[in-house]
Length: 190
Image (spheres, rainbow, N blue to C red):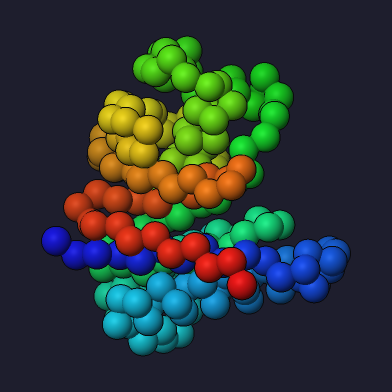
């Protein structure tokens, strides 16, 4: 079974202090560093990283890739099949966002902390949509089919099942498409 190596990097203070376009560009560049480390761990040489007209990453030499960047952390992962990764800080959010993210049936699959569950669902669905190359416009088409345990769940998206694994660190959660991969997370705090 193939192992993939999602990498999460802390965002340096100098990048956190930036604003606007400078901050976004610096976060994106830092996320590409995480991607480079993921590729090195998988013995893959990064090639031309390009995106399609909708901004979805295009594979290079049969290798798929995904990035995520937030104010405190960035992440990257490479894989031999379509892949997606997302990071979020677990925090309060609006009831409207809860209702937009999942149905009553999905919320009823497990009885746990609703805020933590929201971010499990959100990051899982975003990871699947990144892998599919469609983006958040299809959020309502991603259905939580089954919550396996605290770290894994299955999403049904357009009839295809996606196994997603979660990684918790501090007050954050990261999710990555697991499917048939072994996952070896790396959190680099310097």
